[in-house]
Length: 113
Image (tube, rainbow, N blue to C red; front, side, top):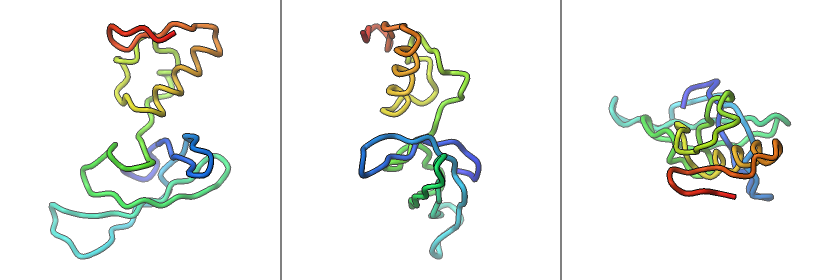
């Protein structure tokens, strides 16, 4: 995850997923060129920070941190079209559709109402 990438950061106290941005990325430890480990710092809209350790090349399998989809994907009728399909992406899209009174959303052949 590079600096400036938009992510979802899980708030441990409330269990909510907060939209955040990767603020810094620092290599930690002495490792080979193919196996680097980084400490990333994410900031949410309120300025809260959380740090996570990630391995180079791993993008969305970090606990409590998931990549965000493009903001143009707010109104998606079929969630299977999202590049990143995980809990915060599903919840965000369902919320956006509900706010528009679009209560039916597909995930492949499955209808969510």
